[in-house]
Image (cartoon, rainbow, N blue to C red; front, side, top):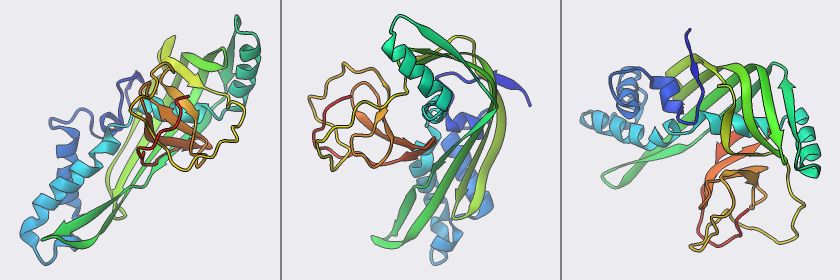
Length: 258
């Protein structure tokens, strides 16, 4: 098993289908066909199987674009030693701390569904499950001003499993090096600010949302999850609780930026 750098361009699609001569979505459609994953839904119209496989692959394609570094960063935001270092550096902003992290595991799970219509009628809901597991060792992490800002060393074995209707259609493990002194964009927020008493009903984005806050994980304004990813212009559907990253759709009512 060869190693590569886990950088800001590595995605779930790279993990599961990297190195193949076709695009990840095409590779997924082929795998769906080989495993017969959607066959029970088209028994009355077998000629539509290829079309359905292509549409399901396209719908699931959003999962393949998930950023591996984002997923592992969400898990690190729960690491006790990092949070303690974050508190100390927040109170002493001119300092930095290097934290050695023991061997640990971060798990990220996603469970979207795809409703299938034929001739305008629903013929069922296809269950999709993506699990990504990071087994990480020998990490030296840098914390400044309450944020995880660099990973100076370390490696991880990442295992990805994609199942459709309980049938595993893609599974792969790859070893990545955590590149020396990599900058984690604008850093990963490790501390939750003081709780607000203002009620939040939805995860929302306004047209005039401020872009001043850097892209990072922040406390989820809906309070349904611990963290939600802010991409510097809007809240996204990526959320995290206790190190597990999931998807939660965004609606369009205004809430403040981080």
